[in-house]
Image 1 (cartoon, rainbow, N blue to C red):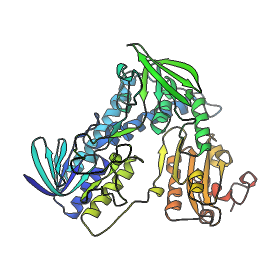
Image 2 (tube, helix red, strand yellow):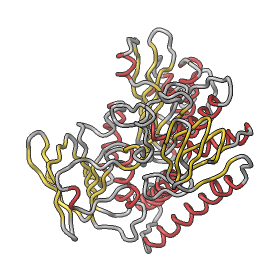
Image 3 (cartoon, rainbow, N blue to C red):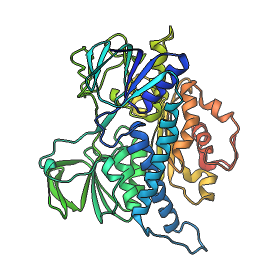
Image 4 (cartoon, helix red, strand yellow):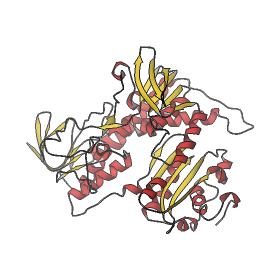
Length: 471
């Protein structure tokens, strides 16, 4: 039997952050790779079949759109896809090089961490079996991630559906695609394919896309996507699907009205399910939530003392940076007297459409449900000088504040570079800043980051009546 102080089950963001921390602390550690997400290799979902490849293809789509929409007068330019297979090859090269430089190479430099490529299962709370061998550890971290959830739609098992994994590796573009799901993943793929010239229909069960976001953000982003050719249908109840080698048909209803849509491909963006089947969690008493994800407390520990869990296997929000933070803090908590926790309220999230959408903190509805008297109102990007300069005035900021204290409780932005702009709001929420703190901070002119200041100023003034540089 092999014995270690620490066993990490997984090889993605949470696992690597934990391994780095364990190595720093000098802890004898084993990292056990493999999980149920088909396309993941060393490095996990993000680098292999998630953030890295999807954002490369999204960037290419946005580049095409920026050129072909002819934003500026007096210029003549256009471009098109000449070799989509080459785009995919280039994407695969990027993924492979990042997997080597950021994971394989990093792992090789860890003096106190051994890597085992296999599936782990709990024999007891301190013993794992891996391909017939037993590994004992004082503390264990579960970081096995999640994979695409396949909904129980009638006929779905009889059609060749895509998940994010297959969609990122298509060697040839389809002429048309149906995307089921109107949250971040579905929206990103819908716009990406539309930019590539594919006819896209998106079906969303809720009455709006991004149902947990501010209504204004959902509304405007939906309009922008429709302007770019994405056919968005909301309030959808899917009855069944059928298909052949040439096409897939989806039969659905909207407010009782029966409809159908046909396309070459169908992509399921209907959430994620945890990779826990091989772990034997029932055998050691690790509790799960109602959706089957591992329950953790604020110190990233499961219901079994000494066993921690981090990353997507613990459920929403599923974010690479959050997974890394959880892996790091779980390790610190396991091997020191520290009790580190994460303020989920100050963790940002984003949708990498064009324009992007990003958020942090509470929404208007959430603040009010917590008994906080909230003041909030949207400010449009058209009132921002830089938006006019770059000739893209799409977007808005909505800032939620405590009406009594003026403290900033939450911010949502839809607009150019929203995922970068949100970080000032993250600091504001994390450190309990007020709108006066933002107003008193000098912002560079002309920049998109001034939208944060305009959002704060809007509680005192009608921003349409202000000059470019107002205090």
